[in-house]
Length: 194
Image 1 (cartoon, rainbow, N blue to C red):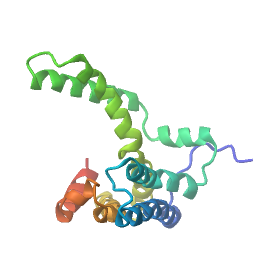
Image 2: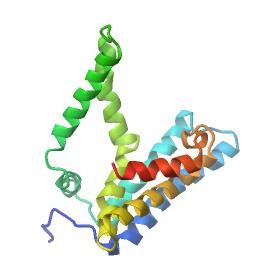
Image 3: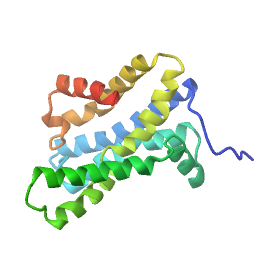
Image 4: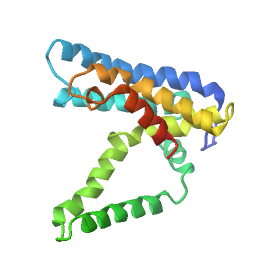
């Protein structure tokens, strides 16, 4: 029985991770594309949004499948092993955001605006993009850094990230369908270094 709780991504994990990630995500988004072409839904409607969310979990699912992590404790250990003290950053980020509300609006912001931020942050973290980072920063980037320098591994990760999003440009109602691709490429590369 394997009692190891931490799995370190290696270069051999890159291909399985990418196959599972793109397969899950693009498969979900292909269904949405077909349904949108048949005018049965769009990326802005509940069914379409659900398919976008399912596809958005491709990198997280690809991580667990490619690293052969199936036990919930091992999943949590993998998620939190890279970020000791993560809650301090989360708390600081929340406080800065709430402080920004007060600075941007000299009148006291309504209490619901202050309370909505943690809810919005939680949604974004777990279903609106943050869920992807488990794969991009937890598997792909560290595995690439074993073969390439940090800057090159970061650019490769960013370009794979852009490629992963490409089907969303073809689906009406998605945020990507409303953004210029060159700008998005530039933005993703820049964001990858943050």
